[in-house]
Every structure is written in C-alpha cells, then in structure tokens.
Amino acid sequence: MAISLFPFKLILLFLTISDLYMQSYGLDFGINYGQIANNLPSHSRVAVLIKSLNVSRIKLYDADPNVLTTFSNSNVEFMIGVNDLQSMRDPIKAQSWIQQNVQPYISQTKITSINVGNEVLGNNDITSYNNLLPAMQSVYNALVKLGLSQQVTVTTSHSFIIMSNSFPPSSGRFQQELVQYIQPLLSFQAQIKSPFLINAYPFFAYKGDPQHVSLNYVLFQPNSGSIDPATNLHYDNMLYAQIDAVYAAIKALGHTDIEVKISETGWPSKGDPDEVGASMQNAEIYHSNLLKRIAMKQGTPAKPSVPIDIYVFALFNEDLKTGAASERNYGLYYPDGTPVYNIGLQNQGQGQGGYFPEMVIESKSNILSINFVIYILTLFWVWELSIL
Image (cartoon, rainbow, N blue to C red; front, side):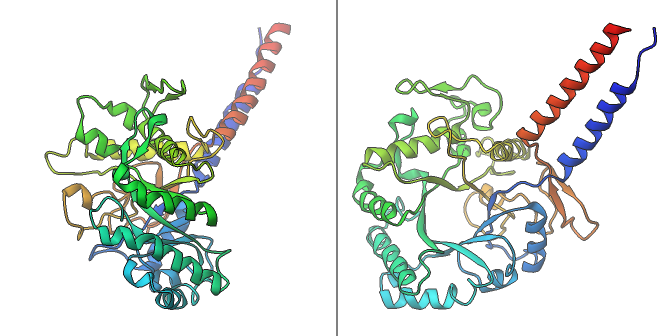
C-alpha cells in the first residue's frame, strides 16, 4: 500500500520554521541596572545588550546622566531613583532636582517613573520613615508644576520585610508598627494612580527554612503547591503567593485601587556556605521559569487578569556590594557581557564577551497555533490512510 509522504514533509517543514521563529522571538521584561562595581562595561555596550534582549524597562538606583543620555531615542522606559529624602522634602530642592535630572533628558529618553527611596520602611530609621511621604509629595508637586505629572509617576519600592504575615496570601498583613506610615502612603498613591512596588525574593524564604519550604515551589518547578483555605485558590509558586499577600495587606487598609508590581526579584548564582540554595543551577531554573511566566502574561491566582509586572534583579554581578557573597552574584551577566548561566539567551555576534544575546522564549499563543496546524495535518494524513 502506497502512503503519501507529503503530510510528513509538511509537518517537518512547519516545525523547522516555527523553531526558527521561536529562536528570534523577543521578550519584554524590566531589569535592574545596578552599578556598584568597578568593572562594568561602558554604557554604550550595555545599550547594545539591552536592545538585543528586548528589555522594555530599566530601573536605576540613581539618575545617572550618562545612562540616560546613552539611551536617548530608544524605546526603553526608565525608572530613576532619588534617595536624599531630607532634601526632597523641600519643594524648591525637589523642583531643582527634577530640572537637573529629568527635564534635560525626557524629550529624548523615556523617563516614566521616579522611585523616591529604596526599601525605606523596615530599616529602623524613623527619620527616613517620616521623610518618605513628604518627599514623594514634593517630587510629585514639582512634576505637576513643571507639567510632567502625566508623563512621570512617583512611587517608592519596599522590602518584603514590611510584611508581618504572608501566608496564606489572603491573610497578608503589613507590620503593625509600619501601618501608620503605609496608610497615608497608600492614600497618596491611590490619588496619583501610582503602583505599589515590592522587592520579593523567594530565595530568602528558602534559605531561611529549607527543611519546610519546598525548593520546587520557590523555583516554579512542578509541585503540589498550596491552597489558601479562605479563598480556595491554588498556588504553585511562592512569588505569586507573595504578590497576592501584598494585595491582601493593601486591601486590609481599605484599598483595592492600587496595582502591585515587583521592583526586584532574582536568585543568586553563588553564596556563602551558609546560604542554602544559592547556586548557578537554581538561579538558572528560577529565572528561566520566571521569564516563561512573564512571556505567558500570567496573572496571580487572586488577580488572574492582571499580568505580573516584574523587574528582574539584576543585569550584572556587582563586585563592590557589601554583605553576603550572594549580594555580589545576582547578575544575569558577568561584567564582560557573558551570561552567568543559560536561561535561553543566545549569542548572535562574535564581539568580546558575546554582547549580542537573544531571548528565546516560547510564546504560548504561538505554541497553540502551531499545535493546531499540526493537529489538522495529522488528521489529513489519517484520512488519506483510510481511503487507500
């Protein structure tokens, strides 16, 4: 019995084409560009790297004019930082800062947000606690006065330490002693439609209690997950549970009109001997799975229609950071531009350090379309067999 090979050839051709498409498909995501190091590449080389990755947003911890100038006429959106809260309380100084650090660049570089302070609450500095909201208000008022408040929003990023409870997610609450600072902060952010930024690291939870925290759960790997008894929602990873816990804590203070975004999350590729879980393998798995979730535009169980919005930490390893060894090993790249590990980043060019990686992320919609076509072709082949 003669069997046509046409359907097989067509399927193989389609798979080849689809694979090539996957290889060239880019992924939008935000990334933290820290510069506490003495061996980082030039800003122009970083711009090439960022462009090749299709990174759509960069978060700086300052307002480095060299970076902002380098990225002029690009499509990258910037969140810049200011940390002198005492000065920013002064309306005149806040306006002067914007005139020096925002106005000269915003016509060419997409500055979309100002992060006033980083992890201020929870650092036991009461003076900073008291300065945070007035500083944010002064910066916002200055933006209004200069006609920039529709282009640039004002926010602040928080450490997850501000949470007193995060499990189950529906029971998420802020530390009681911080509520007096967070409550008016939420009211202000709701008024100006500003997102609530949280730095969330499942790594810390695993490192702190590896006997009871599932490694698969924190790495987005297959696992039985957990069910929130109050909502009956199923969680298959810790990061989503942490995000929903923050939503619950915000709701407990009377707000359902503020979006939660992740301003930092990552996993170190190396750590001190007592930093359980800090390894290249775990870092690769965490970031690979995280980027796939981002590509799928997933929401959390409590907010399924709101895609997760995440800034990965960080672009480079930073050799001058103090503290545990892990602090210097969160980068996706070494300072010479080579990937620390493989999360689907391919080198396109032959330049020093492989500065031309490309994101290889599977698009769920594309996979579904491809599978559908293969399914139809298979049915056609079966039908052809049946009539022979």
